[in-house]
Each structure stands twice: as C-alpha cells, then as structure tokens.
Image (cartoon, rainbow, N blue to C red; front, side):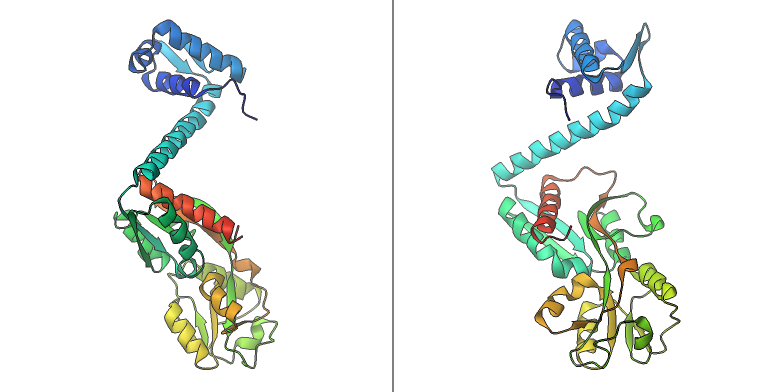
Length: 305
C-alpha cells in the first residue's frame, strides 16, 4: 500500500538528483533552494525507511535501494505525465491521425470495440486501421508507418526494440462448415483425410500449432493449404469439406452465428498472449496513448482477459 505521505514532489526531487548527481544542480533545475531539496530527500528516505543516496563532497552516489527505487520513480513520473497529456488532449479535442495495425483475429473481434471507445475519447481524431500478418505489421511499426500494433507476442528475434503490453490470451480453433462429417470429432487424428488450412511459417500462431500437432502425434497433412487470410479461409471452408486451423478471434463471430462449427478438439497448447506493441524507444503520442487505453477498456468490456 502506498504511504499517503509520499507526494509527486518527492519523486521529482529524487529523480532529478539522480540525473544531476548533485543536490545543488537538481535544486536549480527545480527552482528550489538547496536546503529545501535536502529536506524533501530526507522526507522521502524517512518514508522509504532506507538510505537512497550517499552524500559526499563529489556529489551523490546511489545506494542499491536507490537504484531499485529510481526505476519505479521514473516510470511513475512518466505515467503521470502521459496521463496528464492524454487528459489535456481529450479536453482540447485533439486532432490528428493514429495508425493502428492488428492481426486478423484482433481486427475481427476486439478492434471494433476499441475504435468505438477511442472515437468517444477523441471525436476529432481519425483512426487508421489495417490488418495483416505479424511480421508485416511489426516491420511497419519499426518504420514509423504504424503507431501501434495489436497482436500476438512474436518470437524473440522479431520483437527486438518493440515493447509489449499484454491484453489477453487467445488460442486457436479448428472449424468446419455446418454438416461436415467431422463436426463431432474429438481428436486431430480424425481430420487428416480432409483439406486443412494451416498457418504458414511466418504466422505468429505457426509454432504453437506445430507444437499442438507434435503433442498429438500428428504428421504433415497431405492436403494442406497454408494461409491465414480470413477472407480465403472463410470462403474455402464454407464452400466445401475443408477444415480451418485459425485464431479463435478470426471466427468467433461466425461460430456464434452458426456459420462455422468449432470441432471439440483440445487446443490449449496454442494459447498465447495478445497485446499492444509500440516502438520501445518512442514516447507515445497522446492519440496513441488514448487508443492503447481504449484497447485495454475494450478487452474488459468484452470479458476477454
């Protein structure tokens, strides 16, 4: 529980002293007297119950406890600044554009609600939305063509320089058209004689699906078609006897409406985190911050978390 004596001024003074490595320089930057900033630091250390900085003639040196506290104090001030910036943007009716990329499962399931919430927060702004595979979207994020990407956590080598805030977890599902002979199948071994739409190698869900197949002792499907295209998968599955292995979010609406049937196959091994991705070195614009918050709220409203 946060001690009620702790104030923002304590964090500001401590972080600035740590940056300047000097009480005198920190006091000048914060427009305080040196006795005042010394008193503020002393109050903080009394609240924390530990020494955060060691004073010397050469300046100040961070203690181990100070190093730990600095990390969270800096994050807290950043969060407060972002919150105030976002509130100001809402009050002023921020104009502009926020570009958001989403995996097809996100675009079909959660993103519409997030966009509706965002347009309430920023009615004068324009959300620009596109969907696509993980690698394509992350490349566009790195290039600055997207402000945010909402999708699955990728392999470590695809996530370098990218921050990830988890929203919820999602698994895959195996679906077929109503009336399919395997509509009551309970095991993957029952589907090998039919066309199977399988995620391609660059798809975020591919390693998870491969792991599920190995766990179930399944080899390669002889009639495999590789795609994560929602339009193709839906059309091909509805038009024949194909089975489609795809993220649940892509077909959640079709299953609810009875257009597709989910086979009663255990796919828990494919569960993976869905979250908001941003360039790790960038401060988010006020509109991007608002969209991220809208996404978090959308997940709560849809009970996906």
